[in-house]
Length: 173
Image 1: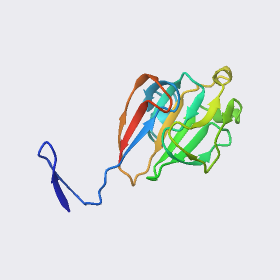
Image 2: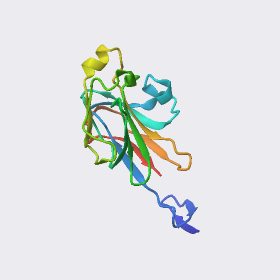
Image 3: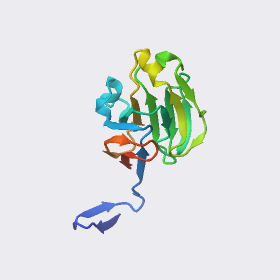
Image 4: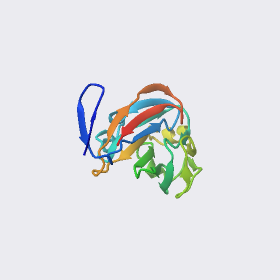
């Protein structure tokens, strides 16, 4: 065990192997960064699958929030899963109940197993089409719950986030 003193003279005791990692997730679309609790879907709002944030989009291009490997692309093109080098899985889910569109209104630019970098385009969507079909285009970005990993998350709300540039969420592992 290693003992070290912090600035406030607190003593932290831990193993040398206890390395703190910080992951930064960026806005996945231009728009307003919201708390995940504001998503009008209980599964997301009640954090049943994990913590995260939402974007009320003002653009129709969705980009990767972080560097990683695209481990899944939903057949309906509405959901994308990225795994980081640290093994953290991120879900980008476009819209509420948009699975029911069976891919209509979505044009994907990536495939499963593609390596992506922060800001790389994943998909474009037709907001007018989605709204016209009666669906909400809000985008949920979820850090999938892994009970084995302790995470502290900090949300950065923003009224006019820029896709791939504005920090939306920081995760300390």
